[in-house]
Length: 92
Image (tube, rainbow, N blue to C red):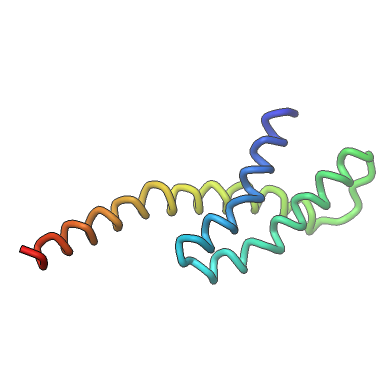
């Protein structure tokens, strides 16, 4: 259960990371998933899960956040390195 909460906290920070890396549309798309994820967690902790949308939102946000973190940290760094190399060629 602790790992799920840690991953939920990281998933909640993902829209902020996306916003800082100029991926505004993806950040805005993920915000409803974050709200749904926490609503599902509260309902599951209290023992009454009543909606179909909340579990889909929970698991969808976990997958979406993982993909966004990979996009920001792995692919984003490669793009930054390419930009730096390109700028170095221009300066020379």
